Length: 320
Image (cartoon, rainbow, N blue to C red; front, side):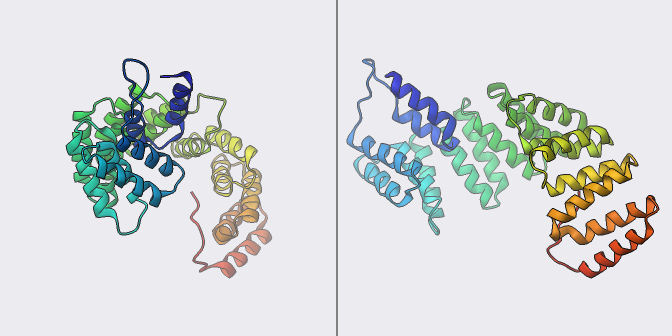
């Protein structure tokens, strides 16, 4: 395999959706001489993959179908066609059939199990999704994204313990920040707040990136744990990069209020009202209570009148 091909593979491994990686790997297996002899059917499959990456799904389906006509046992062609059919309305049953065919032709094709399990999840068949992911792990234990997929299904089934176990298995192979965030959320749902916080801390340990969603999650968790000062720090980090983070402004206002720092809380509610008119009614009520606490009763009454005027707005968003 040439250095150029290796570089392209590494780029794809970072960029393409995980369900396509099996197809990529299958298309690039070298022979002993270092080159990759490609059949006519495989050429069509390669083209189908490229078209899929370009989001030209109809042409990709055509190329994959051509590959299948030339070689009905080419498992990755069925996989690619199924993935493209997933974007076509009314083609779900054909996509499911293709995935089952791909698995029957190559029982070790982890990506096909993952794709099939995700279909079952979308259909609301969580138990069947778990069975499918489990079969994939049995036959292709190194296709680690199956652990992540199964953990999501376990969470849907309310089994946080098994979800955590699967995410822990995934982390052994891929200790990336987002995976710690995923497991942290599972710990949080299971009520294991300290472990959740530890995972969020690990997820945020890479200071080169600002993972805003993780900061938000940790800020909310710290608030739940009554660690208001730490929650405020995370909120402030987010607001520094986006002063119009309306829900983060609301959360920080709540934290300031818990610390009885009412002027700061009022200031944050005022900023939130300016950038979040959909939630203004509830925000005016919250600010009114704080105005009362600092003795500004006229402003409090003004806010309550405004809140009453805005009451019944169906677009209002909840405060944390």
